[in-house]
View (cartoon, rainbow, N blue to C red):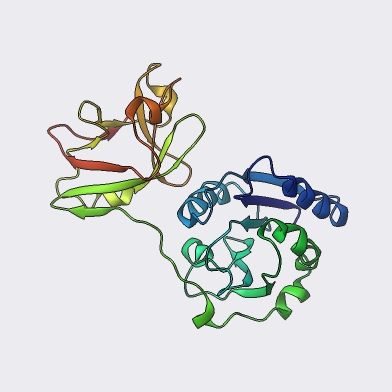
Length: 264
């Protein structure tokens, strides 16, 4: 576990981020830490899920992901879980995130119980993380009974009357809009070879780009991000401000007279 990623809702100014890293480095001086985000909206499992989907495809086998995102049900579900998937390892609260990200059918193991303030999660489990590098320790962990594992499912697009409605899951600091619409979802629309992405009354997308730089400055680009979902940005601009679209807004995909295609 030479690489450790940390995702939290503590905020970039929280001193507990530095405390967590100090504890980790004091016990594992050779480890490398990746800060995925510390600005996750509290209790937002869909945002956490999206950010991890963006990351895990770029990580080496054996990478450890720590997810310290608070949730309102922690008193009734105090377990701190450990899981394996994609050849990588995951630690976090029993929020439903890991079954959503990995599989509802696999086993999840208990590292301990939530006992302290949320901000102290990472420093408090730091000693256990060093032990997790030992296969014998991982094999000694006890699985959480299936009925005690919180199950939640990712927010998915809805198809009604031949039109698909997706949702903006995340907006970054540049105003890029990240949705939950996958390429496979478009296949569920009748006549999907002739569809358009409706952003506003006056703004639609009828061709997808490989990356936002393919369109001229100031123009809107639609493309598939590393999470495999549709992203919308403005080259050298802010799509959220320009289009008036925020996190939680709906994105409509509907039949069109033009074919939706990917720029070559």
